Amino acid sequence: MTATPRTTGRHRATRRHRWVWPVALGLVVAVGTALLGTGGTYALWNGTASTAATSVRSATATITVGTLSSMNTTVLGPGTSTRGTFTVRNTGSIPLSMRVATTSATSSSTAALGELTLRLATVSSAADCAAGLAGASGRLATFDTGSSSFTLPAGASGVGCVEVVLDADAPQSVAGATTDFTLTVTGTQVSA
Image (cartoon, rainbow, N blue to C red):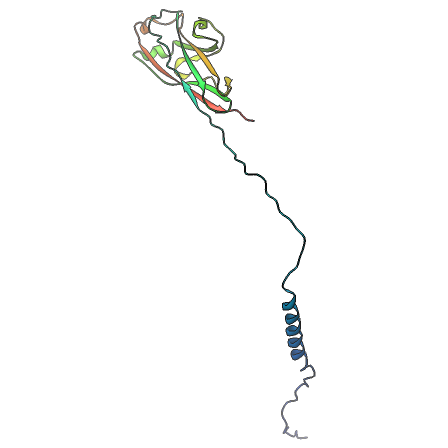
């Protein structure tokens, strides 16, 4: 048996669906043309109105602190104290939680810093500042009332009574020592 070579080309599938592309194109053109004519309005009834203009203003948190009155008019002996006062005013527009802390303390005798106690109390007036008032207390060099010793309302003032006490058992080595210190007053916005 010998095979006879084919003289005709490969068989092609018949193109039965030649009409699909022209019909689809015609349909797209017809729909597009129809929609172009209706694109003028898609009317929905609506209305708008605006509120009157208003402003929002943030609060201010500011304080002023008066000078601590002179405390060096009285010399300290073991177990004695000296007092001074200062004023603080909340000049802002919100209540502030107040904190008072020693931010600087130096002494001609380093031992003296370990023998001095600072007491702080709020009083109605400078005349009310007396020895032994209740309030915050700690070593002078590290004194800190903490973050919320008292709250000062907006526009209000307060008077701080500062008492520095030399320990009753202070050694002779602190005799004649001079100590300088700085108290820093910080006001922090009270949470709403």
